[in-house]
Image (cartoon, rainbow, N blue to C red; front, side, top):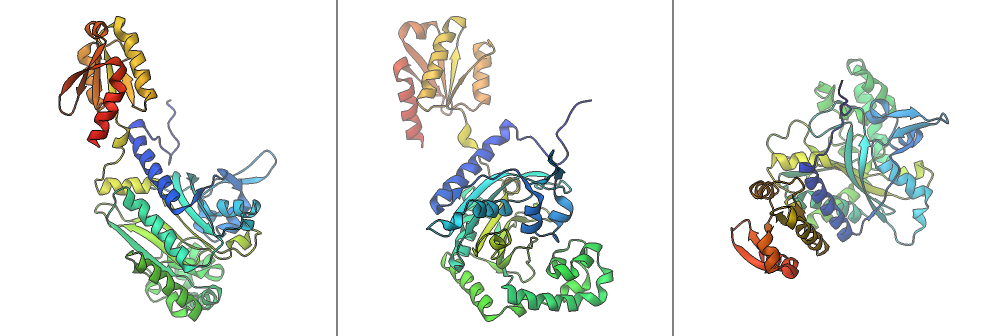
Length: 426
């Protein structure tokens, strides 16, 4: 019996890893431009963190977490999302005491949820997320949304749609909650068991139910927009104003509630409108979570953030037929004609690499024709041929694969010549 990867996991093979690396490089560069600093938190945390931070009425906590007891009989959970861990680190390490607020953080790493695997949604997935903690300025909401949009634009995605909503402050949420209970209670027995449980605890979550989304009461449920107080409405108007200032198009969807309990005020999702993407079009989601820091034992520190699946980003690239990862292509392939010239070829490869040129050679004892085919498969920009004549003359034959042009270059100038040709090509 062969051992295979567990259901819902996968291997990122070399022909795909270049795409991942390019996405991660663009993310790191954008975060540098926006001045978000990286934070790395443990892959597992105390289960209580997610029960308190994510919410015990969510599907994540109730159905999807990988939870286990350690040898000290402590309940630990593989992290299903990133925000709770980042906020825990913010509180534990007293980042609220830093003079410059908000503290702007980003993370990239694996998350784990026990759900039905499907395209772009696996049980182990890689999530990039941003958290800006310590400011209630609506401008930071717009900045966070702008950063998310820029990530997708930087890799060439165009079929994007930003959807936003306001979940209001505590006062607005309480008034809306009472209206939802009154609306659903008379016929709650017609809904799934999860919705029946949510009725009193968090009826807003009923609107996010996948099982009962076509129930007639869903379409007539009270809209949160009708319960926003003056302060909440002004906050939402300010966020929209800043988005317009950044020339970011958006659509207001009063039914957007997001799936986690900690959200309030701004909520948003970025969708893919690419043809063939499937029923689940959400690429990224996020929102404001004033109160989460206090729930985890910290001082009043309002925050906002988002998270995106790298797998779904790559799926969107596939749907839009956008190719990335070509920057990993081989620049120089050194061909040794026989065993007597192999040592010289080996030293040339070393020198090219020391000068920042990606270089490779044959390690299988193949003939010239087979080596040339290998260089072609690897998409080498240049092939350097080393034979007995080249050794005797102190020069190598350098062939530019794209044009077929071939020149002789002294060994000591090989790196300089390729770097010069490379700069002219760029």
